[in-house]
Amino acid sequence: QVQLVESGGGLVQAGGSRRLSCAASGRTFSDSFMGWFRQAPGKGRKFVAAVSWRGGSTYYTDSVKGRFIISRNNAKNTVYLQMNTLKPEDTAVYYCAPVTNQWGSWTNALGAWGQGTLVTVSS
Image 1 (cartoon, helix red, strand yellow):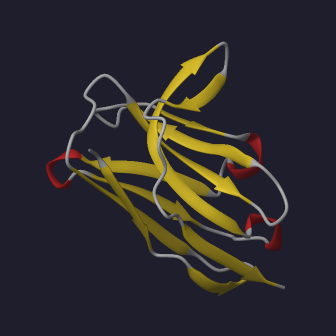
Image 2 (cartoon, one colour; image 1 turned 45 degrees about the horizontal axis):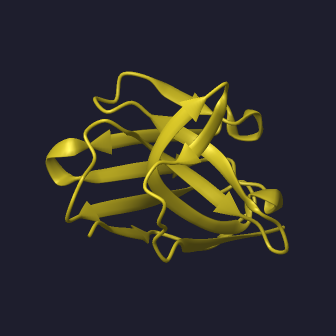
Protein backbone atom coordinates (compact mmCIF):
# COMPACT_ATOMS: atom_id res chain seq x y z
CA GLN A 1 0.00 0.00 0.00
CA VAL A 2 1.35 3.40 -1.00
CA GLN A 3 0.84 6.40 1.21
CA LEU A 4 0.75 9.93 -0.15
CA VAL A 5 0.96 12.69 2.40
CA GLU A 6 0.52 16.26 1.23
CA SER A 7 1.56 19.16 3.40
CA GLY A 8 2.36 22.85 3.26
CA GLY A 9 -1.09 24.28 2.73
CA GLY A 10 -2.53 27.16 4.64
CA LEU A 11 -3.86 30.67 4.37
CA VAL A 12 -1.97 33.07 2.14
CA GLN A 13 -2.78 36.49 0.77
CA ALA A 14 -3.09 37.09 -2.95
CA GLY A 15 0.30 37.66 -4.51
CA GLY A 16 2.04 35.53 -1.93
CA SER A 17 3.85 32.22 -2.23
CA ARG A 18 3.54 28.78 -0.76
CA ARG A 19 5.41 25.51 -1.22
CA LEU A 20 3.59 22.22 -1.01
CA SER A 21 5.25 18.89 -0.35
CA CYS A 22 4.13 15.37 -1.11
CA ALA A 23 5.86 12.57 0.73
CA ALA A 24 5.40 9.07 -0.64
CA SER A 25 5.94 5.97 1.42
CA GLY A 26 5.37 2.31 0.82
CA ARG A 27 5.17 1.05 -2.75
CA THR A 28 6.39 3.54 -5.33
CA PHE A 29 5.79 3.26 -9.06
CA SER A 30 8.93 3.76 -11.10
CA ASP A 31 6.99 3.80 -14.38
CA SER A 32 4.92 6.86 -13.52
CA PHE A 33 5.50 10.56 -13.45
CA MET A 34 4.30 12.49 -10.42
CA GLY A 35 1.72 15.21 -10.50
CA TRP A 36 -0.44 17.61 -8.59
CA PHE A 37 -4.19 18.03 -8.85
CA ARG A 38 -6.50 20.44 -7.11
CA GLN A 39 -10.15 20.61 -6.23
CA ALA A 40 -11.66 24.04 -5.79
CA PRO A 41 -14.75 24.48 -3.61
CA GLY A 42 -17.76 23.04 -5.36
CA LYS A 43 -15.75 21.83 -8.35
CA GLY A 44 -14.11 18.66 -9.56
CA ARG A 45 -10.50 17.65 -9.21
CA LYS A 46 -8.32 19.04 -11.99
CA PHE A 47 -4.76 18.57 -13.15
CA VAL A 48 -2.24 21.21 -12.14
CA ALA A 49 1.29 20.02 -12.92
CA ALA A 50 3.41 16.97 -13.59
CA VAL A 51 7.10 16.13 -13.51
CA SER A 52 9.01 13.28 -15.11
CA TRP A 53 10.59 10.63 -12.94
CA ARG A 54 14.04 12.21 -13.02
CA GLY A 55 12.73 15.75 -12.95
CA GLY A 56 13.93 16.69 -16.42
CA SER A 57 10.52 17.53 -17.87
CA THR A 58 7.62 19.45 -16.40
CA TYR A 59 4.07 20.10 -17.51
CA TYR A 60 1.52 22.64 -16.34
CA THR A 61 -2.06 23.58 -16.89
CA ASP A 62 -2.32 26.97 -18.58
CA SER A 63 -3.67 28.81 -15.57
CA VAL A 64 -0.54 28.20 -13.49
CA LYS A 65 2.19 28.46 -16.12
CA GLY A 66 4.83 30.95 -15.10
CA ARG A 67 3.64 30.95 -11.49
CA PHE A 68 3.97 27.37 -10.26
CA ILE A 69 7.02 25.11 -10.34
CA ILE A 70 6.88 21.37 -9.80
CA SER A 71 9.98 19.46 -8.78
CA ARG A 72 10.95 16.22 -7.09
CA ASN A 73 13.63 14.74 -4.89
CA ASN A 74 13.67 11.02 -5.49
CA ALA A 75 16.17 10.40 -2.71
CA LYS A 76 13.52 11.69 -0.32
CA ASN A 77 10.53 10.29 -2.22
CA THR A 78 9.11 13.78 -2.22
CA VAL A 79 7.43 15.96 -4.82
CA TYR A 80 7.10 19.71 -4.43
CA LEU A 81 4.88 22.41 -5.83
CA GLN A 82 6.22 25.92 -5.48
CA MET A 83 3.32 28.32 -5.91
CA ASN A 84 4.06 31.96 -6.58
CA THR A 85 1.91 34.99 -7.26
CA LEU A 86 -1.06 33.19 -5.83
CA LYS A 87 -4.55 34.23 -6.83
CA PRO A 88 -7.89 33.69 -5.08
CA GLU A 89 -8.84 31.26 -7.84
CA ASP A 90 -5.96 29.03 -6.74
CA THR A 91 -7.89 28.26 -3.58
CA ALA A 92 -8.36 24.51 -3.49
CA VAL A 93 -7.41 21.27 -1.85
CA TYR A 94 -4.22 20.09 -3.51
CA TYR A 95 -3.44 16.42 -4.07
CA CYS A 96 -0.41 14.61 -5.41
CA ALA A 97 -0.38 11.30 -7.24
CA PRO A 98 1.54 9.22 -9.76
CA VAL A 99 0.26 10.26 -13.18
CA THR A 100 0.04 9.06 -16.75
CA ASN A 101 -0.81 10.99 -19.88
CA GLN A 102 -2.93 10.01 -22.83
CA TRP A 103 -3.76 12.44 -25.62
CA GLY A 104 -2.88 15.39 -23.44
CA SER A 105 -4.95 14.29 -20.48
CA TRP A 106 -3.27 13.59 -17.16
CA THR A 107 -4.81 11.06 -14.84
CA ASN A 108 -4.07 9.46 -11.50
CA ALA A 109 -2.12 6.29 -12.28
CA LEU A 110 -2.49 4.94 -8.77
CA GLY A 111 -6.24 5.03 -8.40
CA ALA A 112 -5.98 6.36 -4.87
CA TRP A 113 -5.63 9.75 -3.26
CA GLY A 114 -4.11 11.15 -0.12
CA GLN A 115 -5.82 13.54 2.24
CA GLY A 116 -4.72 16.59 0.29
CA THR A 117 -3.69 19.93 1.71
CA LEU A 118 -5.88 23.01 1.67
CA VAL A 119 -4.57 26.24 0.20
CA THR A 120 -6.72 29.28 0.80
CA VAL A 121 -5.81 32.49 -1.01
CA SER A 122 -7.45 35.61 0.32
CA SER A 123 -7.94 38.79 -1.66
